[in-house]
Image 1 (cartoon, helix red, strand yellow):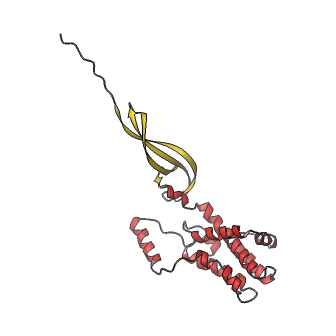
Image 2: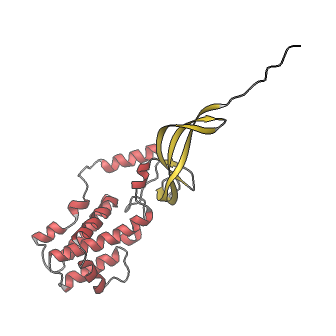
Image 3: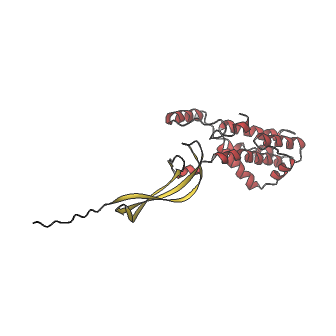
Length: 228
């Protein structure tokens, strides 16, 4: 009788394993709102019986929405969240109003009143003289940072409204001086002139099925405060 030879089954292969390296909040385009995310790093490993034995090369990182589980490139983390965008306009308007007043006459009653109205209209209820004095005491770096942040988040239509509101502050008591013209945030938030850019973006949005964006912020928030 022939002797039986035992059969040994060895299962091996390659598999990518991920580990969470960070967590936070991001704007998920699939969900259409702010969601929690996990930033994960992956590494390909040699497996034996489905157990990672030898780590091999890295396969990069991605960001995963914990709600819809969609995977995004890490560039998605540079997209401002809805909450950040809602806070950007009031902060930017306060900074712009302070810059305009400091470039002219900070004590002008007409200019101060117009600045308070502009800040209130941007979404800061109850703004008054005390809050304005606090804004005037901001450092130049803090003002510049707020202006840069709001400038990158506004659509073209909103940039025009924003610039007009700031210029009205300088015009409240007299024609604009040279320093007030320089303080106007138009050079910080005005895009390069491209008359066909909007049409091309609309066509691109429709072509890939992207939802139409709101008229004020990139996520469509802030319409009420802007009066649009």
